[in-house]
Length: 308
Ligand code: ASP
Image (tube, rainbow, N blue to C red):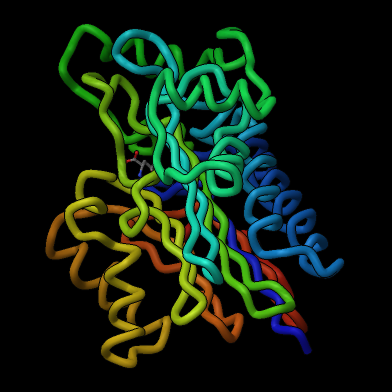
């Protein structure tokens, strides 16, 4: 057995059956299942963990259901500014972007940075210039327009309120993926539109290596979702990796300590997906729900939204 494993998320928050219609629930599950089966088959064909997480995130970015890529929320200026990161657990190479506009798949840009740049983290106009150089696809503003998200933003645009996407009546969210491939290599990727009505070029945890995204073959690969300000200050992803590396915690123990204890005491709502070197998965969250899915060698895969 090769211990192939993949897990994905589509955001965490106040997600309850009461806030969902059967059609919407089906649509979410279909989108999650599709991303899982496509990315798992990359692993089955001998593809790398990096390829698998990139593809899973591309598929979720292309869906208007999630707050990433096409479905990104509106900023205070009525625009879309996206953040994303990818990391390779074998080499510890990473690529990240913040505050980018008009890029169809921000995760593709992070991969290009990982592969072709001496830098890790690019932002705004410069990141877009880099994207042009590597033929990353751009889209017009209409591509990112979604009526529900427009309404979400219109209700708060003249205020200083900024809201986590999935605390609204309809719940959407940031997307992410983690994987272990047939060589035992790990990778993680995360992509987001951030928070509705965000201003001052606010950046969340998702593109920050060590906070929202981290991968290290020695320990684990992690992609987070939730209230970014708390995840940044708790350095969530690296904290979990450190508990494993320096304290000998298992993946599950480390995730429980950080998500269910430390973050809860801190007031940080959200969750994450994680995989370790053996292909064990953990998908903890301290919110009402988290859009999620996973599959691993020899085990039945699953997609879920609410608490078990
Ligand atoms: N963590 C993201 C941010 O704060 C939001 C989310 O996960 O939905 O930008």
